[in-house]
Amino acid sequence: MPKHIAVVMDGNGRWARKRGLPRIFGHRKAIKSVNEIVEASAELGIKVLTLYSFSTENWSRPKKEVDALMGLLRKYLRSELGKLNKNNIRLNVIGDFSKLPQSTKEELVKVIRLTEKNTGLLLILALNYGGRQEIVRAFNLLSESGSKSIEESDINDNLYTKGLPDPDLLIRTSGEKRLSNFLLWQLAYTELYFTDVLWPDFCKQDLLEAIIEFQKRERRFGGI
Image (cartoon, rainbow, N blue to C red; front, side, top):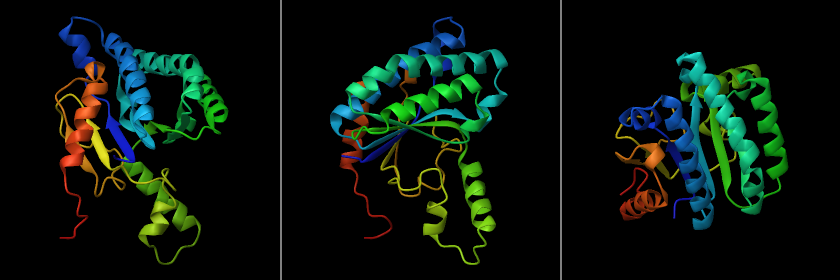
């Protein structure tokens, strides 16, 4: 089984457009997929699940859509706290979430604090996250520390994901085949899985199919 699964949740807007609905309806439906995949990952014994929830580039979307996304995030955190604790799931965040709306930050900090003692699945939300920005941040931290010579381990220790295993499997939905500035350093040897299923339609069976495909692959990490 993969220890760490990362997901680019793509296709919410297209899901809504296919049905003649505003984009926000796709985002609302996407929350149900998040719930199902989080619970399935916990059941399967996955150690870490990282969801690309809001990128640094997403701020360029219309303000109305950004505000709606932040509202959905707050609603998710409030409604799912009990279920996270019941399922022994711990929440954390990667990215510069200091730039999120104050009410969203407060809700995040609250749920992180109230789930920190859970020992099952670690659910990571990538919020205001960008892979290039994360690497630049790591080098700036190393520069401030006065480092003369930099090793891979030094960079790892200054990433948002310090102490976490790199993803074994990356899933991207909606048929797009690119990384979109997500975990660029950490995905060096990750198995990539692309599916045409739009994220609001992605379910436990789709997750199982991705894991089965992962299990068929031979991971050599550059060796023979």
